[in-house]
Amino acid sequence: MKLAETNYDNRETGCCARLDVEAWDETEHVWDRKPFVKDRVRKLFHVPLNFGTVVERDHQKIEAVEGYPREPFTLADERSRWSTDLYFTTDREIPDATMEHLSGTFVSKVFEGPYGDAGKWMEAMKAWVRARGQEPEHIYFYYATCPKCAKQFGKNHVVLFAKVA
Image (cartoon, rainbow, N blue to C red):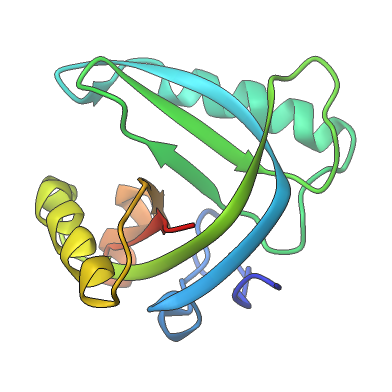
């Protein structure tokens, strides 16, 4: 199944594109070994310490082989207050990178608000998935905009993905 259409036009900010909320909200995605570059960000009580370094390192590897898909996004697996695993979408194997292939059925839902609401979003996501008659196996975050762009857009959108099968 094709991912939601995202208008990846970042000319407005030179950084993040506006998220097409309707395309990502309450949608289903079936992935069969969807490739991602996986890396880990160190944190101290949920505050990222090396986020920029990790993103730049993986971005360079993906760009070197023109490996970004048409609709790029990054998933975050908020493992603990000490680390987060990042999953960068790609359309091919990336040399010298840790690759992870995700398979299964995922449902996504868009949330809006400050990053501090992440715990509330997680609980709301679990409730929404259960209301659909499914059980969330694992939940990932897609932070669609950086803080600077969220301020310019006047909205901070975050998409949560729950693996349900």
